[in-house]
Image: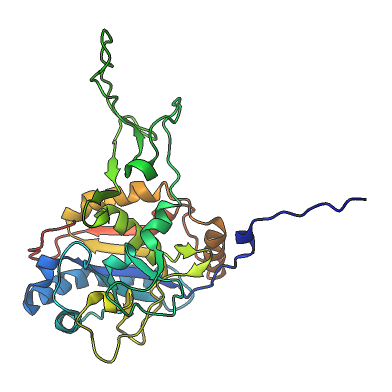
Amino acid sequence: MKAQADFHESTADARNASIPLAHLSVELGHFYAPDLRQNEDFFIDHFRQIGIWYSAARTALETSGLKVTPRISTCVLIDDYFGKLDPPKALVDKLIDAARKADLEIDYLVRESGCAHTVPVDADQAETSESGPPGLSLAELVEARLVEDPPPETTGARPPVRQTGWLCNGQRSPATETHEAMKRPTQWRPPAENAAVNHSIFADIELWSDDPKKGRVWSCAMLAAVWQLLRLGVLRDNGRWVAKPQPPPAELPDSWRALPMVLQLNKRAAPFNAYRAMTICAPLFLPIEGAVRTILQQVAVDPAVLAEVDARADGERIKLPPEVVDRIQYLFVDTGPVRGAGPG
């Protein structure tokens, strides 16, 4: 009797890392180059405004019926991707001191360029050169998991997002011009949202562009989508933990790229990754975060990773929303005299 061959995917044997999880990750600021050029008073005022809402978020979690002391971590995101910054040694201590003077503690500082550029395959290593070692691009990891939402009754003839760099949540308006003789132009139709309630709110989002000199440039919306998935602990590389927090070096370097992507500033901090993420930001970030939610609704998170996170939440008697995008909370509030240019 002929033996039957046994085929299986090599990735089927990959094990998902069990990473530490806080109950809530609170983002205290997303700072761009114009912001980071401000003096300490600017940041003290910013953190004092944020502190009001951070206290409210902490109180809400403490009174939510948890059977344990809430694990809450804080973070700030630094835009070292779109803008040129002063070196870390000139900025990191300024942020830490300003937060403490506003009675806040920054647990983690994260480089936005780490969402775009490669990070080490071995997450226990920090980037040690300007170019960084060969490794993994988190934006490419998310791009590979995009599952487009085709409009009903369409053929799927539209070029795929990985070819165009554009992602939408419905049916675009057809082009009205024609290049064929004696042929009438296509009649205009309005765009339509796939899951519209009464009326459409159509979104068409640029994920990346190609620059002749820089190559691929990821959009702010795409990098923010990576950032949210990272905070929620559901972004993995074949089950492996990516961007593991690292302690700061004994002496801060001149280059941001010489720092780990996620820098743990507080030794006693709750875990960086969390069951839920809260972003407290100014209303000017609304368009970006709306785009982020559209992107995340079309990201196929590894079901094994989701199952592992959900099982751990159940063990703590925490019920998480089934959709990852619904695990993100927002507070759009006046955060003080924002002088920066806003999202890239």
